[in-house]
Image (cartoon, rainbow, N blue to C red; front, side, top):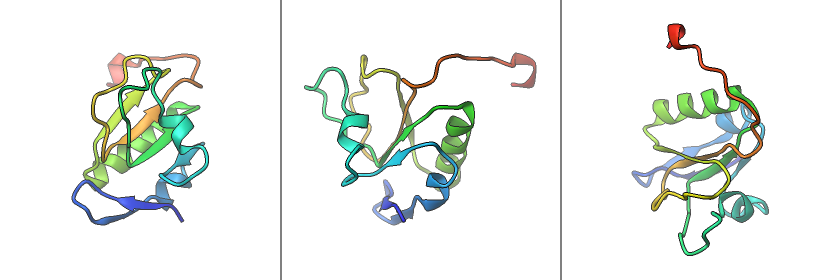
Length: 107
């Protein structure tokens, strides 16, 4: 079961999130470094976990989990424009997503 430390330093069980998303990687997982590496390697990134989103459901599940657990969320499309500090955040990688649909009336 994936666990990590929350921004407050408390253990955070990521298993419920891992069960709802396509791919979740935490430090120590083989794909973690590859998934969170920005294009500009001079910007260090050490997120709490990386969600390699494939569907809108992956994003929704991640945001809901983050909200329920007081964890920040950062987004990285292809690694260009990497955020300065994603430490303690759930990093949603959207490179595998191939479209967007906005329902403004539904907010």
